[in-house]
Image (cartoon, rainbow, N blue to C red; front, side, top):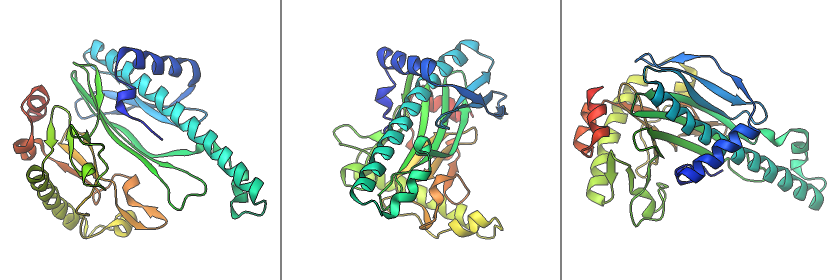
Length: 298
C-alpha cells in the first residue's frame, strides 16, 4: 500500500484526491480530542474500509484550519483508495489460489470480507499550530499467501505555510529510505533534519540509541502486559524510524520491533518503542529555518 507524499503534493494531485474523498468516502465521526495547546480534533472514519484520518475541529486561526483540513481530505481520499485497491488485490489472490488448489489452507479466507485488508492500529493528530500539523498512522496490510504481514507506517508533517506534506525520505541521489540497504539508511526530514553521510548518521544513531536506553530502563518495572511482552534491551543498528511532531518533542518511533510472531510491537506507540526527544536536546542536529525556530519555542 503506497502513500508517497509526492502523490498528495501539487495542485492537480491535491484536487484529484480531495475530489475522490468528496465523491467516494462516507464517514462516521470519532470522539473529539484536544491537544495541549487547545486545538481540537477528531477522527473521520470511512464506513466501508475503516480507514480513518484526523480533522481539526477548532483552532484559533481559521484559515490555517481550513488549509490543514483540505490537505487531510486529500490524504484521506488517497488512503481509502489505496485500501480499496489492496482489498481488490486480496480477493483476486485468494480466488486464484482456490482455483488452483481447491483444498488450500487459505480456503477459510473466503469467509472473511477483504474490505478490511488494511487495518489501522494507531492513528492520531499529534501536533497542530498555525504553521505546522503532524500525525502518526500505523497499519497492518493483510496480504493473503504472504509469510509476513507488510505494514504501512507513516509520520507526516503538514507545512501549512508551503502547503506541503512530507515525511522522512531518501537523501538526494539515494534511491529510497528503508533502513535495510546501504542506500536506504540515509534520510532527511525536510526543513528540519538531514543525515546524508556516514558521520552525521552515526552521530544521530548514537544519540537515538542513548535516548532509547533511558526509555527502556524507565519501562523495565512496568506492570503493563503489552510493555512486558514488547520490552527489548536494544534497537537494531540499522533501525528504520518514523518521525512525527508532538508538543513535548520529536517522537521517534521504531518500525522494527517484534516480540514474537503474533505481536508486532511496532504497530502501537508505547514507552518501549516510541521515544520523545525534547526539541532543545535535538537542537544540534536541526537545520536553521522557520520549522526549527517554532519547535524550539515549544
